[in-house]
Amino acid sequence: MLRLLNLKEYNPTVEQAIALIQIEIEGCKKSDVSAIKVLHGYGSHGVGGAIFLELKRLLPSWKKQKYICDYIYGSQWNMFNEATVNLLNKDKSIIDEDINHSNPGITIIVLK
Image 1 (spheres, one colour):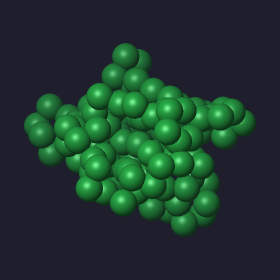
Image 2 (image 1 turned 90 degrees about the vertical axis):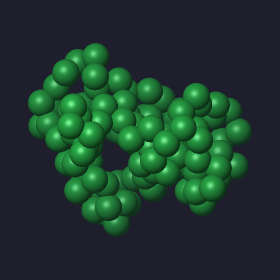
Image 3 (image 1 turned 135 degrees about the vertical axis):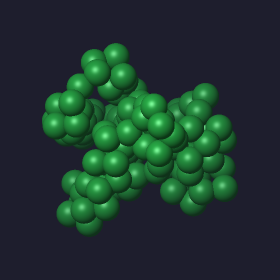
C-alpha cells in the first residue's frame, strides 16, 4: 500500500514537515504500508523547495541507519528505475498517477 502525505495542504515549515514525515513513517511501519508518497512541491523557482532540499539531505542517512529501506525522488519514479520496479514488484497494490511523469514535487519513502 502507498500512503499519501500531502504537506502542501498544511504549508508547514521545514522543521514541521520533517516532524510530520517522521510521525508518518513511525505510524506506517506498524501497518501494511509499503511506502509513503510525500507531496512537498518543488518550490516557486524550480530549483527545489526547502522541504525537498532537507529531505535530500536526510534520506541517505535514514537509509544508512535502516530507518527507511529506500527512497525514490519524483524525477526517478518511473519504470526504468530499479528501486521503483523493486517496490512495485513487492507490493502489487501500488497504483500511482505520478509514475513515469517525472514529478519533482514528490518523494517516495520506501518502508518495506
